[in-house]
Length: 211
Image (cartoon, rainbow, N blue to C red; front, side, top):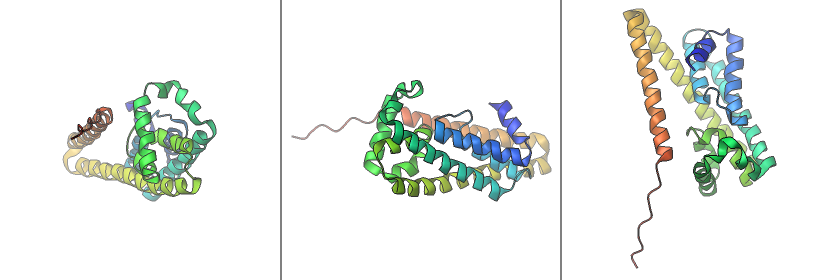
């Protein structure tokens, strides 16, 4: 994925917005994660810090792409229903799908919002919400709110990381900047591993009845 990341960071401003937007849109609308949506959002922020994009424009593109993509995913779930569960990609994740449906049943719109911040739930939650029969107005409200918070958060993370890289490079040279970049990458990887382990962790068994 490193080569693709380098390619994205070397795009002209217009192409950057287009590619980042398409990567985010595809993950939400089509369950496709060539590059995870959050990574694409971070890259938009990094490029803004480097002067290759406008921060506000990068945020607008990421938020719009995530909201529109999730709306398409919702419609896909509403139209095709349980047949989606037979997709090869999803067949190996029935336990997670069950957890996502349970989360939707218990929390409704809040699950749509929170699902954006969990790697596996992010691309499938819109379709599951449509499959569950959730009202479109309710879904749109939580989808838009989640898209705004998620998009601005990850673009800002990229922007701050990019600024840190530039400041260190200016004062300590490229070697020091590479240390910062490596630390950011390690932090992202560690967070990803923790989220992955949390998702795979078995749910605690219920306490025995006292009677």
